[in-house]
View 1 (cartoon, rainbow, N blue to C red):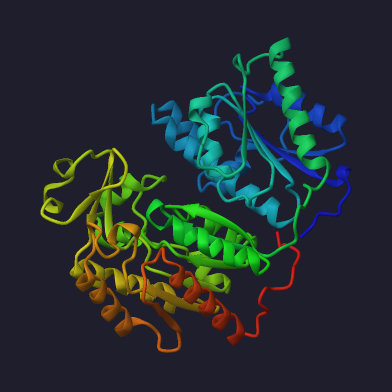
View 2: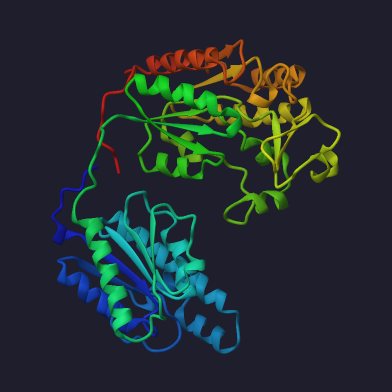
Length: 433
């Protein structure tokens, strides 16, 4: 929803260790006050004496992180790993930030410091919505959390210790950046509803065709390549009105691979078998298709001899000079079909399934290296056994990248929207975030 509050009523939250960065935080706070903004400060330090006051002191931050400050200090003095204290204070700051956001007292967040602050920013900022200004001022650019959406990183050329003219100029720039982002609402080029599509290189023609169909019906379209964490986050934040999940390839590793391999593939370093959970709970209409389920993908491999031995006896294909595609088997696709059906079955909103009968990617159309109609039939057979009977299924005679598949998918979208008396295209609506 559009924020109509005047500029002076908006609040910037500053997080830092105030024993080592207190003077710098006080300077930045004053520069923001001069621009008419309210400021709340969070002390994320543990040892030492704060050199400026905080609205949320380190004792409160530690408690919010599940420990007492005295515990952290005692552990540090006894030689404990510094990471324990850092994790506690990061979790505590994140908890406070969430509470401030829920109370309408957070319009922008600034984290300031060195490597520890840069690492903490990943925890504190990761659940904030798209569009809320997030600024990290740090001397350690390489530690900046690259996975955080629309994060602004201001890399200081010198350490943030002491208010010399270089540090003062850097902090002035940070204040100006935050104020500029809060000064006015971003321009809105369109009030069209937003449709999200999932893609891989082997399903790009399908995504392009569907984007054209959706655009002609009044949608703006956005495409997510290979991973859906950001799509799910945007859905949770109320930014997405329709999802066409053309490329469900992520189900291959999430169903078939070990925890160890999943952890290596995850941007968070831990195994995660969930997918698009916020979408399932949101009620947003969506269609699923089996794009990319016909393959394992091995980036960095220049030939079949460079993939794990258990895959070398299968049909395979090169996707560019250093990516090998290996065919999924009938047994694997039957297992994946259960996950696929579960995702559709748990959807709270209108949902449908579109299946191409001529291959799930460009690499498996008739005559292509991964063409295996028997394996594709195993997927369809297992899916029919597991899918909720009220979920409509559209089958297209061609490959997923053929025109007929796009046409059938659009007809399916019309069906699932009409079942819930949803307009096609939906009426323009103001965003909920």
